[in-house]
Length: 401
Image (cartoon, rainbow, N blue to C red; front, side):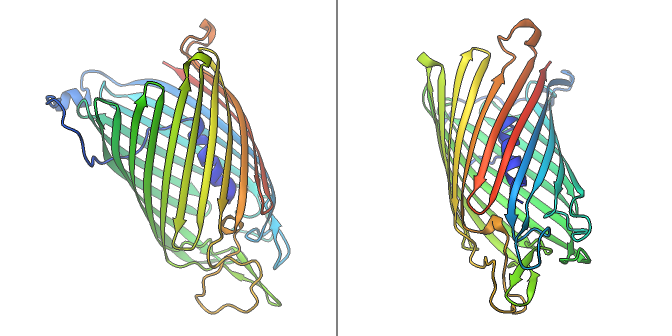
């Protein structure tokens, strides 16, 4: 469902988490720095304290049609009408001067027909819920090196998953550049169900991901970064209950290959203009996988400070993708057993446009009554050329300690 992908991306943009897992690849020669002791790293005598608590709530109002939806005629597109509410809690905990933990708890409440697989016929308007729990830890093992770990769990109907990751990051060139490799392993377990909502069997899939990231400070006001990511998935990749129309025969179920290899290249430049207190960031991503889907995404975001503790943020995002090789919304024959097929509109050819505008209040320098708080308010509009639109409202409140 498109809303879930965009919701995760929006939440990550509004409440940035730690930059992920890393493994050092190379580094320029540096002065020798004595390694800290275990007690210095773990901070046995420093005590634990909460640095900040942030609560973000995003609301999506979605409308459109898609062949994967069960809320429609057999063989035809069904309603993608939905609303999604996601409270997103983040707590930052400082264990010591060198150790920091971020705990994130997202909760989804979805009112929609298409994800309601357990009783797709009689309860298309029921609510679906999901919840997650994630802990990211960063340990500065030296002046240049940072060890990171990640553990996460997610549950939704009818799926549960767990993720583990660890890595290393190094600052080089007098802290003007960083090089990192990130990695994650996710295992999903779920109930396979048919188009009537009946359970077929238990199934699973595994996802392994690795990323190389490089950033460079070009000047006091200019930063560039880029990354390459590769992801391999294995197991049951289809939704299993999604319908694929067949001419003269109603519909059949969705079938995917059992392996998928995905590649993504990204690049970004950020430029600050001191005289006007403005910043602009331009981001590009190229994606390709062995299902035949390729995509280009361009994101331009501008930031304008009104006062030192308040700025406006506006953005435009354009996305264009091809369809997977086996996409169809009108099969002209009964499928061969095992033949890959999908009518999921998320895997079709389309263009997407998203506009957003928001305001962010920072605690530093704010009036005394607001000095320990951060506040965000943002609205957005998302439109896709294959009949999907979303109106997005995001509000957030943070407390610094």
